[in-house]
Amino acid sequence: MMPDSGFIKGKLAEKGLRITPQRMAILEAIYTLGNHPTAEQIITYIRKIYPNIATGTVYKVLDVLIENELIHRVKTDNDSMRYDAITSAHHHLYANDSNKIMDYTDEQLDAILTEYFKNKNIPDFEIKEIRLQVIGKFLNN
Amino acid sequence: MMPDSGFIKGKLAEKGLRITPQRMAILEAIYTLGNHPTAEQIITYIRKIYPNIATGTVYKVLDVLIENELIHRVKTDNDSMRYDAITSAHHHLYANDSNKIMDYTDEQLDAILTEYFKNKNIPDFEIKEIRLQVIGKFLNN
DNA sequence: GTGGTTGCAAACCCTTTGCACGGCA
DNA sequence: TGCCGTGCAAAGGGTTTGCAACCAC
Image 1 (cartoon, helix red, strand yellow):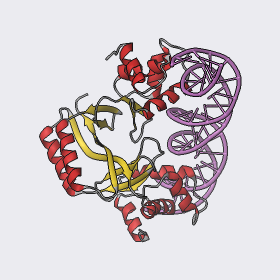
Image 2: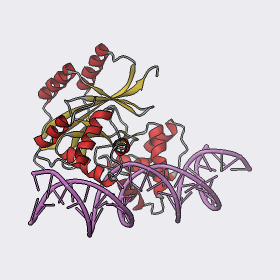
Image 3: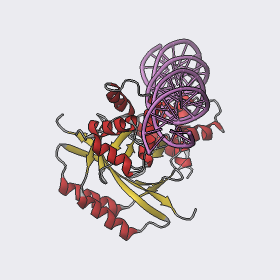
Image 4: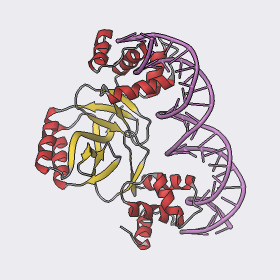
């Protein structure tokens, strides 16, 4: 996936964020890299065409993007943080032997969970988001 | 919750682990502290009665306990690691404004999820565990 | 113009590691 | 007794911070 710069610009503008080359590069990197890149992977990718970007800048921009809900942060039990462009609600499959993470989206599952929690109604807790982590391993590879 | 030392000893013995004062203290601390303590909270708690325990030892013991499935490691998006005595399969409620974590156990939910994934059967992926993270906030407190 | 952003490098913090000593089985 | 476990202190590594220069708006 290689979004054009208009798409990326739009995402930033939508949130009233200042458009800077760094922010565009970082957001584009996350969309392009796709598979839940680490900060390091994002930095490496961007430096190929933009060698001067600073590590600190990347972390600061990532924080801004998270605050503005343009990306998510994903963490596993024995891993550094990973970043993830927000497209729609989705769940994750974790392979605990290979550190791979895959998205899992299924409307039926979301419907089941919503229905379940509507009936359960946990007292004094307001649900904002439901995330499922499915842990296991990928076969044959 | 304040488990007696026989209970703790049993847990270690069950797994064929050598019984040492440090291991007993750490496991007992996790049971007693209850609410998903951080390593630091565990260390502080233990040092009150056992001032000489080394930080490195605590981390090493925690790793051993995890490997032997006596405890779990829980991670949130903006937090250091937390530890959790394993009692039975359970899910977590995260409050993202207060860093609180609560356990959530419900057999009906587990049944629904198991049923769902049995029918779905994700290709090339063998499920070991399903964890739900419910993110939101606690009301009135 | 000016307040939000960036680059840089040092600081941070939690966690891990190596090694000699000590204590459980 | 032999070997695993512990203490200690230093190193590690990803992330954060402070500040001056810079540039989007």
